Image 1 (tube, rainbow, N blue to C red):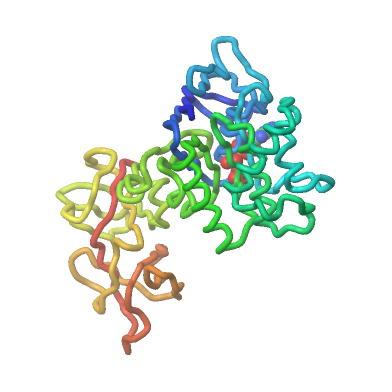
Image 2: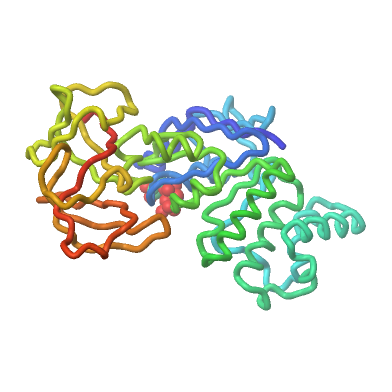
Length: 351
Ligand SMILES: Nc1ncnc2c1ncn2[C@@H]1O[C@H](COP(=O)(O)OP(=O)(O)OP(=O)(O)O)[C@@H](O)[C@H]1O
């Protein structure tokens, strides 16, 4: 049980800046979910912690142990970390138990201690009954749990998960998310979980960090990120928000084309007050469909199509060049389709 502390980590591959002065911290026994679009630097961060990538600046510490920085670069095998990848690297010629025992064998544990520890870990990941099985007789989810057990067996200080659930289908994925949450709580395991799936990041992380183009954009609890995205990018990425360019003035937001005019009362300013050029981000649950195309904060829309979801139907509308998503609880019953969308909540950022 150790905290992970990364300060000002920078990584460059030739002319590509993969990470730029990233600060991230995970408390002991907590899960940090790292999310961002493809190429944002998630794997590079994880690989820097694991020791497969050498940062050109910054410090990485686990507990009191400096892994990177101050002239130190500890090799991967001496970092005491566990890692699980998307595609389970389980050795086909070894049984489940032999796979899990492998790190202990390399660390020269004696046979009795090894067997006790392997049985314990197989219990943890609910695989004890399959200890003697060959990996090619297991399901994908079972094989991924073997990889997890092997990463856990030597009691890593921090567990690193690189898209570790991404190759699995629901509902297996959901059950492994729960298993990871339980492991962190019951065994006080510190984890960094990299995923491109924002719902998974919010579900699994005690803290969620959003990366974009190698920079940390926002970090906070899932509730903080959900309710207060600090930038247009996070509003788009986490909320599917529609973004409109315009400006703030006279107590309202007005889009450049004049189609969207919204009173300040329903607007939130997560990155401080804005006066002048601005972006308005409209999350789907911040807009409601109405029968009239005009009115206060209403823009005329045409319904294009809709997607069913458990929280309601997401209606895709068009208003001029703008494509707008609206989360609605009732749709499809009305005899005439809605012709307006009223803004009830929007986020404003400087432009
Ligand atoms: N070994 C490498 N050599 C050169 N460039 C690299 C290397 N590894 C990563 N990059 C570049 O660094 C940037 C960040 O890549 P990284 O794999 O960390 O992103 P990611 O967020 O994990 O993406 P994905 O979700 O697609 O896996 C990208 O521009 C990528 O092309």
